[in-house]
Image (cartoon, rainbow, N blue to C red):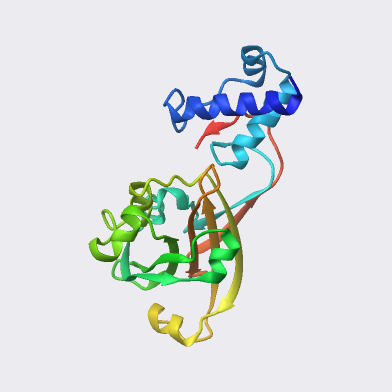
Length: 241
């Protein structure tokens, strides 16, 4: 069997074990030696299969180059929902939904190779008894529970929960971050002066089989949010996300 086929066999077997609950989030996978013996492949093939799983965000590895967004020093996991991640930092932040409506965006449809008929969800997050700290504008597929959110609202007030209810599971994502001044409309929403510099993050996610899940543009208060990058590599085995 070609090496590439063995690599896919190992990766697919581990994906199946994760999907069926044999391994759950937080579990450590067996070591490379054990996996190589189990699947009768080389450790190099195992490493390649684990790299595929890490690329698809099935597992987290300790190494390489990566970046995460932090809020007051706490790392955020957008896949779990920023509200939950920010709450873990100990700060009481609430989200207010500004709009949920059907839109058409041919440019994004071409970019992500998806139907340009989408649902737009705009939200602002605020520290309780404090200022607005982020303005998020998400575009999601017009399917199932996501489409019904226009009439019924978000599941438990959460876009992440609504995406899950629509049968979509984000497995891989790309993120771009820069800094730019707020325009007049954005400044009005956030209660800041026009021209105030904010972090701008764009995250585009897909399922493991390539279906578009979400494109979200976030404007983040640089006094609370940071971008944290990691470099280097250790030998710790991957763990489930």
